[in-house]
Image (cartoon, rainbow, N blue to C red; front, side, top):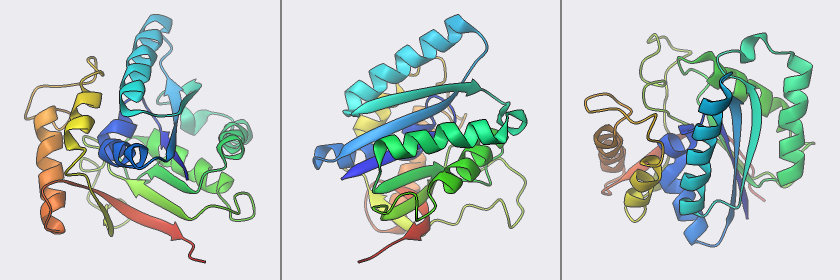
Length: 217
C-alpha cells in the first residue's frame, strides 16, 4: 500500500504522523512525504532539508518530495500553479492513504496545503484512494482561536506504543526546530500528547486524526 503525507513545513510530518509512518513502514508499506515549503534563505533551506532527509531515512520513508514553495506565503501564491504542483505529486504517487494537516491550524500554510490537496484528491483523480485523514501539529493545532471551524476533533486513533521511540528519535534530527519543555515542540510535550491520545483508546501511546474521507469496497 502507498501512503502519502503532506507536510507544509519540515518536521510537521514527524510531529503529526511520525509514529504512524514508522508503523506503516514496519508493516511493509511504502510511505512518501511531500514537504511543501522552504525558506528564502538557501543555507537554512539546505540545512533543514538535510535534517528532513536524515529523519526520513531513519523512519524508512521511500521518497521525500520537496516543492520549495514560499514559507508563510502560500496564501499569496498563484493558486493554479500551486494546485498543479500538488496534483502532480498525487498523480506521481497514486496513494491509497493520505495524511493532511488540520485545516484549522494557526499557520495559514497548513490550511492552504489541505485545500490544495483536497482538489487533487477528488475521487475521479485518485480511484484507488481509500482514506484521507487530518493530523494535529503541536504549536499549531492547539494555539489557534477556539472557534468551531478551528477545533480538532479526532475520531481515528493509531496505536503507536511500539513506534513512539522511533517518532522521538526522528524528531531529534530536526535540531533547529526542537525547543525546551514546556514548549509544545519539545520531545517531552510530544510524549505527553501521545500518552493523552493513547489513554483515549486505552493504550500507552497513540496519534490522533480526523477522518476526512473513507472508501470501503
